[in-house]
Length: 273
Image 1 (cartoon, rainbow, N blue to C red):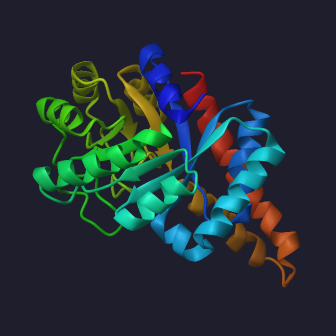
Image 2: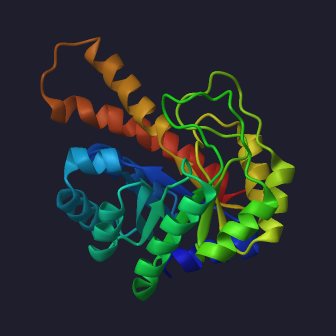
Image 3: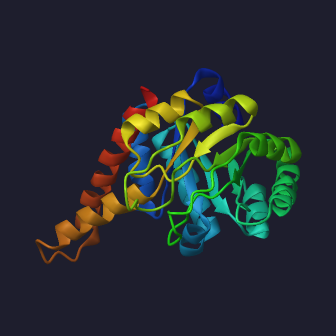
């Protein structure tokens, strides 16, 4: 089953799939370990900054190798693609899904760029995700709330043909300054008015009951990134603060296990919602 089919199935059944970002070997192995232990499918996400850090070919090779080793149903997704050339190259190199994020541009520009990627990906039959509305990115103000409107979402999907749509419904990327409040009724309305699979960005730090309500009302893909980095680094700092060990092969596994525990908890929440 490809990711486009999986998300359509989720929409039909009121379910969601966890999408986890990875940044190196340790975080990739952590999310796959959690998925294998839970016998769960998983979306593996690479951002443009992670690709710049790892190198595109290295990142793809590492991901495909571990997917085969762990035997987990999983898909490789480009998260928040803004470089059109990189998005197209990712498609050519075998990504299962890509996101074109032109949400900060005008509606017409967003539609034109998203449509261009949808058309480019047609022959590959992969999932294409777009974004509409203001979901604050790292470093951006979380006080500005511009929610995605149902009629605009319907129009955007019809004009672009996009398979999945990230919507602004009260979430934000990074750490929250205060507990977020998802607009559950808005999620429900958007879900009913469009055929696109809905995506929740900024899943880190959202209370569990809100995540469950979001899924029940139409969210098919739940993104998790910040908490993965945070759990890994907090444990690494803790370990290094109590000894003078210089062998990363001894300290990294403890940080990796912390990320495994986090993703396991999220999978249990989402899969049994």
